[in-house]
Amino acid sequence: MYKFFELKKVFYFLTAISILYFSCTPPVGVFEKNILIPKQQWESSFRPEIVFNVKDTVSSYNIYIVVRHSDAYNFNNMWVKATVQQPGDSARSQRFNLLLATNEKGWMGSAMDDIYEQRVLIQPQTKFLKPGDYHFTLEQVMREDPLLHVLSMGIRVEKSNH
Image (cartoon, rainbow, N blue to C red; front, side, top):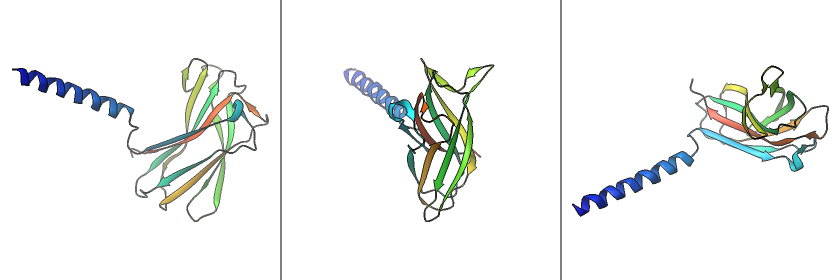
């Protein structure tokens, strides 16, 4: 009888450890990296670079720009120039108008106190043509320079379900 209770304790302990481990582990097929903006003032000369290593060239991926800003941010949107360099190729750039708020609903995305985070899909169902390191560079191209109340910027790459 004593061994049964000891075995039961071990089972509960291992179950609790497993739950903690899997709840803290990011989902498979997801990469996300965010870079802090110095002094929460994004100068156009500061261009965060994020490197993502691709091994799987068969799957499709969704690519997001991750914006974290405070409630004091002055605009409903943010213009960002994103540049990607594939392994062995020249860089390609594209401008994105990231909608962060509407006049009717206010800030979009998730909030914690006065900090808002939003993932904006910029490239749905993208296939990477070559394995290797992809370099993503983000540049703010707003009229205000520095762009105030921006906490961090990042890239999220996740496997598409399609």
